[in-house]
Image (cartoon, rainbow, N blue to C red; front, side):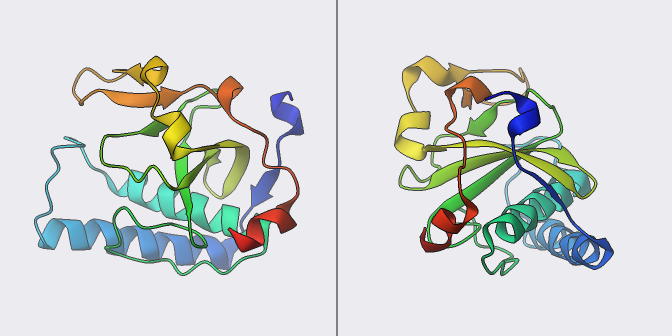
Amino acid sequence: MIIEDYPVVELDYVQIMEGLQVGAARRLKSHFKKYSTAGNPSPSWDADIEGALAEMAFAKWAGVFYNGSVGQFKEADVGQSIAIRHTRHTKGRLILRDGDPQQHTYVLLTGGYGRYTIAGHIPGYLAMADKYKSRPDPKRAECFAVPQEALTPVGDPKAWAQI
């Protein structure tokens, strides 16, 4: 499958405003609760906001409710077991870290500013294989960086409603 064939989701103005609020609430909670930034030495509003928008975009595409949870680290982002990962890089990799739940299905979305491409998915236990170990950012700990070629296309949105 080539990138042009991946599903693209566009959020409208109101949805983007909702995502901004979720992302800002996440950043503020982390700041005021003094959560550790050891895993991300340079946390930003941008990462939290774009992450929330990507979660919302996937939920919109799949036709499922998006709850916009705050402070629910390591729980599913959408549905019962779907974890969303986001990158602005068109050919970026899906990143997992030690401690991420292996039972989740991880979905990668690329893009930004309310327009996202769904690049594919992979079960957590497969994503955490030694062959994907990498350190793309020398300032951060080693991670699992799954290339898009290793992801499975998302297929029919209706199939995701039960996951």
